[in-house]
Length: 615
Image (tube, rainbow, N blue to C red; front, side, top):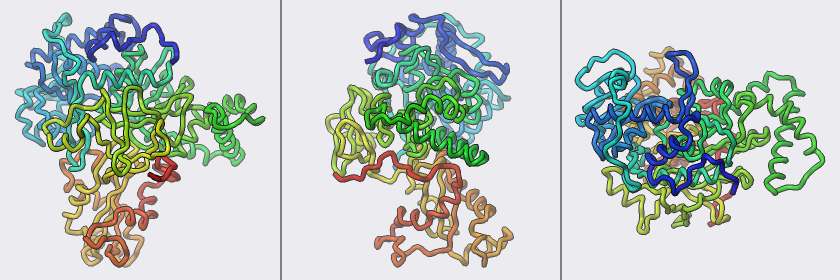
């Protein structure tokens, strides 16, 4: 095991996440904790652990004044920032439970989460966001919304957070203390019904997982980790925020993904924890940059990547040393570093999770000298189950199971997981809990794994139809397709988006019903090219958005391919029981799907495993 720094907090020093935060503040009160850019002040701001603790105490006083009691739920709708984590700590210190809301989600979806969780208090950035949520749903249990900006129309339920914090007692201390088995957070995850379900994660679940991940990942001296994956994800909180409290790392916040490149260029980031989409963007931008370079430059970069990959395989003990490896130090400095300018000069390793990392992307990164550690997990498991190690890294695998976690293979090669990180169950959903958690505490992941390697996980598929996008979001296609078929113009529909950034739909429409629409859009119904028109696509996207009101933002249809072909048993696209053969449709219209996504995602190999399921 690598030598840990003196600032490292051991498992024995904290029983809860509140204890962990307090131990970090006591251990290094004056050390830098968080860095973030303030758009109000137009400057970077730094907070020490002691300053963060003072902010937490103010929030405790504000929330206590708002009537928050042990067991109450508090919804947080803030961008990635120290404020999110300060509210998180304050809520848990009061014995209450956090509920993360996504800023980019629809008001109806967030209203559902507030209503389902029974949250009494909402902390949000803008008054307009809170008002839209209240318009989308009654949220009868929501008593107070604390907001930072905007004019307040509903003064009875919405208040300014800054005014409340200014009056708060900085010396406030919680009258109760959380226990290790207390519920810490409800983390909502998409289920097979299309509606999100709240996984109940305790302090023990999250704290165990944070320690296990910290033990598995490399120790970096003076670590600066970048936080950009939305904090409502347990993945971001555990692998970045809570792990940083253990190791003493500094968190640099990127408040919005569009500022990611700028933040990486201006901040001394050593560790990037992300979802495949950020690495795909780098891959796409690199290829775009290379397309404008002379041919000899493209060849030089291709040779560098191939050589870097060979050096990587040698370092992993899977190949022998070659004479050409002597060129690597020179090429790494003068070629690879130039290609990696978007990642900054200090990057030491990257972690990819929440979805499959396309193999060409992983190969390119390691070929340029950036170790990529792919992992696997799910919210219900706390969330991380496995991750590759720096010196035991297989690009086509999702890693080695974390210490303290048990796995076994069930019927049909389904991966079952058991350990201290597994959730207590689903909030107010005993039927779903009984279906996911079997006797003995085994969690059914719904993912199939290969039997070829007992020590390392290779995913080979899923038990049920769930699309995992490169953003890490999951969506069940069946309820979305059912909703789309309610449109009078749609005869059948198939939703796609695996290893892609957004969902797309292939819809079969009767030609006679489509002709009047195309004429209104000034399109020629007799021309096949009209079916690929952006006007027709936008027409359907707008119609579908009305059908999918209440679905999360990531479950909305963003691309549409229209066809007048009739899907039937004759052409093999429909089963004898009148079910659409989703995979056959996707293969049949592969060119249309490629056209919809364009260059937004690499398409060589999207799966994490090269193995077939031989089990």
